[in-house]
Length: 487
Image 1 (cartoon, rainbow, N blue to C red):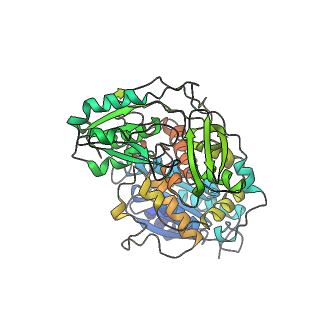
Image 2: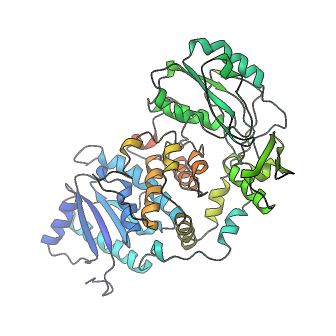
Image 3: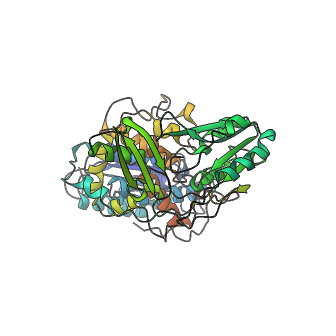
């Protein structure tokens, strides 16, 4: 029974075998009085603790999680705790977007000889968790009235447009035509099965080139296809966000720079087809009845069900386009058209603004309502240009059996957390995961929160420098923006 309150809570401890586990053992041998709430899991090194261990524990009933390892510069494996420190600090910044109080997780350092310090650490953390009380359970949360409408009502901001029709499609075609004989394939966009759907175009001849289109309906990220075409000479037409994915693929050596020719065009924003569908349904029709459509920088004109509807771009643009930082390609061998000015103005995305306005309880309730609609189709994973281990995804692995096939809210949310953690420091916020979701779940918010943590802690933006080292693959002995608390 807990020595603090007489009622045990569920606290999980991941302890390094060489230092902290030894310190806990020394405290036990010395008969130091300790709370009994903690359940210890011994690991080889704090560097082997995946952040997913902590999230899985918290989502599956733990009231708190404590990680303890060797002191910095005293790691049995030299650098393990330096890598762990970065990953665990990022996790503390990520937990609030899930509705989990970051105070329920802590990491610290205890050596094998510090029995007294271990007693202080475990007592202090257990006391903190008892003050917080039992953690809220995801399945038991209820969505407050009007929360979804409040989320949707957050101001949208501006689009990255200079007010000019700067899309020089013919110039782009001429440039591609010049290089096409030396390339195996060029990836762009073409009109799809109806006037509102553009789809990826794989150009191998001049006849294919005539199908190339440009505009707000060029939704797909063309960089997604590059890893599967490795070894071929490939040209790729990109928007600003697409180009960041190309940079990230180059950075991770998933494509070869000498085999890639990048054609960049300035972007003035793309449409969100789900917004158009909702708007049409409110008018008594639907996106399935569209007969014709015209799209430009100013907006979209649609003929559906025998009537004409006009929407301003601000009404139907994808959320990622508001406060866009990179409307122009960050990497391009051939840049066509006038550059569009950035509209970010240093502001955070509307999604993060919406979550910042919610309480922790509301955030957890919001995710419960969203995950209840998830059908586990894995479209978000399949569309992600940086999710390249699809054939070995832990969502479908039985060794280790990370995620079951149970149709529960927790298992669904856990899969999304896995995706967010695996793309931490890598995600370029292209929005393909959210675009591909058939249930319109705003899962990009998780990646944006992770990116905000990466930016604040390490002053790093994914997909902007091919020579940079992602922050979670590096460390500094003295971290500039990590101020570790002492329990």
